[in-house]
Image (tube, rainbow, N blue to C red):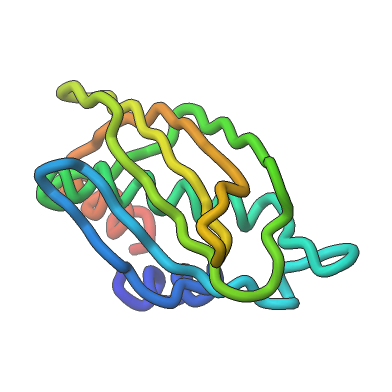
Length: 141
C-alpha cells in the first residue's frame, strides 16, 4: 500500500505536505508542475489540477477523522481561472461540512504569487479505512 501511495504522490509531483489541521479539517500540499504534465504552451493539463485539488480535499477529510476514513469522491467540480504553469503550486483543501458517512469539501489552487488559479468542491463518502484496505487486499490476492 505504501509503495502505491508513494508512486501516486510522485506521479502528481507532490513536494510536501505543508500542513494538516485535524481540528479545522484543513490540508495544504505543495506540488511541482513539471513540463511532462503540460500541454500546449506550458499549461498543466486539467487532470493534474483536478488531482491536486482532490488530494488536498481528501487529506483534509482524513485529518478531521484522525486518518480512520478513506474519502471516496462521489462528485468533483473544478473551476479553472488561470493556467498552472511549470513551478510550484499550492493546493489547499478543507472540510466545509461533515456527517457520519458524507463529507462536503472545498479547495483552491494557488500559484507562487498567491493568486487563486482554480477552485473545487467535492462530495465524498467516508468509508472506514480498515474496510477499504481489507477489500483491496482481498482483490489483489
